[in-house]
Length: 266
Ligand SMILES: Cc1cc2nc3c(=O)[nH]c(=O)nc-3n(C[C@H](O)[C@H](O)[C@H](O)COP(=O)(O)OP(=O)(O)OC[C@H]3O[C@@H](n4cnc5c(N)ncnc54)[C@H](O)[C@@H]3O)c2cc1C
Ligand code: FES
Image (cartoon, rainbow, N blue to C red; front, top):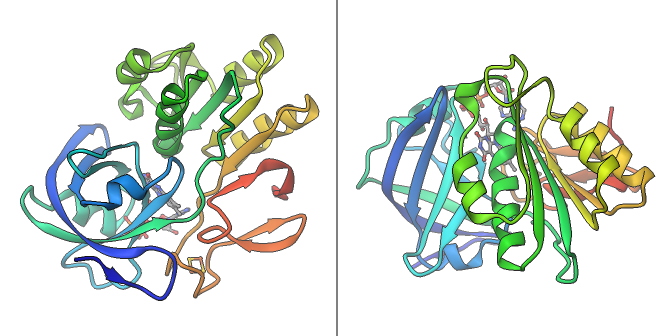
């Protein structure tokens, strides 16, 4: 039985169904979370407590790629960054974790949109993957640009090609797969060549800044999902501040998805 918390999101017990290496430093974990699977919307995130982690109170914020409402499962894809994610990669199938969610505001995808441009860099691919599936479910064509540092960090491309109606373009900084260079290059080319009624971006801030500036210039609604260090995940600690035209906002409660025209990028 989920325990209600005073803030947004509730605590759920999550049984680990699978936890495996995808490639490079990228791992995938599938969690059985019951009704949380049905509650999550693309672009929202969960906070995962890792057993054996002394910082367990702070938890690890992670987006999800997809949910299976019938099985009550969610899939998270995460990069090994530090001690928390390293410990998470060692958790075995059959164990139980504590997950807080759903957290934050997801992508706002208008039902009457016909074509979207989705742009991901690095682990930004996770919420963009969820957005691509949401577009497919709503009958919206989506061109998806996925960029990574190198080939080993690109994942999910075949699944995107199979499930999304639109062009899927990959890029790597070192040219080991797809186009050589930053994801912003094919993204800006697509923006110049096609009409979109929606642009969604998640990745390094220079990527979000460049693509959103061009979208706004062209009058295309654009949202960005901002990653910040998050201690609590529910508005209590102010570690996740984002500078906006309306003053400082919290990425955990007001975001992580923001209207790009409101964000003041450095
Ligand atoms: C809303 C949200 C969704 C996220 N979704 C995903 C996801 O789907 N997949 C994924 O791989 N990662 C995701 N992240 C990032 C993930 O939470 C961090 O990589 C993780 O917390 C690192 O924990 P750690 O204990 O392994 O490393 P730590 O010891 O906490 O960190 C190692 C280093 O990385 C830096 N760092 C940690 N977290 C962040 C951050 N959020 N932004 C910038 N620098 C950071 C630290 O300052 C430190 O220098 C998300 C973050 C947020 C805020
Ligand atoms: S993470 Fe604590 S206020 Fe946002």
